[in-house]
Length: 72
Image (tube, rainbow, N blue to C red):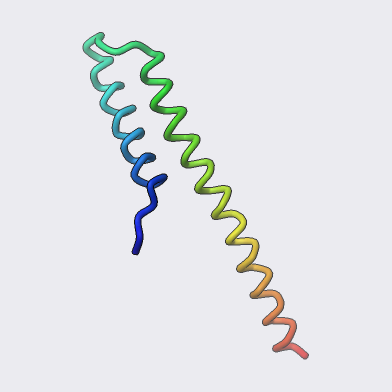
């Protein structure tokens, strides 16, 4: 299975956000840095799920067509 650049970026940004949140407990990073990492990760996740939604709709259309053919 081929790994996409977007998948790697998502996990890096999510890891960065978690790391920044943990460091925030000690008072280090700013909320802006945490928000930037989270927005980046959520943006990539949103893009991935919007593609997934299209794939699911296409699959459901194929299933409906096959069921119609089977019932005829």
